[in-house]
Length: 178
Image (tube, rainbow, N blue to C red; front, side, top):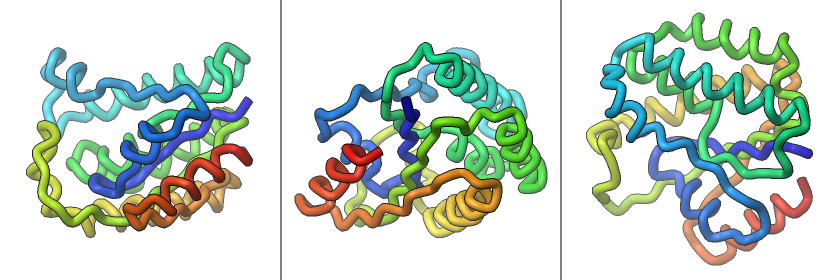
């Protein structure tokens, strides 16, 4: 069964799309609470490795058949992007991690949906709100790393979110086909 990972920059509407579909179960790792509880530090490599460890385990569980068809709200791509975005790791380290992830077969039965769009209304969401001013930098990293994944043979589906009912319907129809 495929693991469907919905990725994208902050304010792209990925969580809205995921939470407003009733077709598949959704898992969203509570990174904010865990990050705060263990006081990992925004620029700490420990934060990156914590997220990478979670991703390895999730994909190993999927490859071993323990997970059914599930949507994951943010995953390995976010861990790589935010590793670089927060200066936890270098871009070359992030690509090395993704390459090793692929080499180990951890992308088997994985589909990545990269949500593209930008919600232009200010909001108060979480401890990362201050990073919203760096949106173009974050989107650029998502584009770069998703292209790298495609080169590695990982299926990345680019989904344009217009923040309307049609976008939600297109999203639902897309996940039905995966």
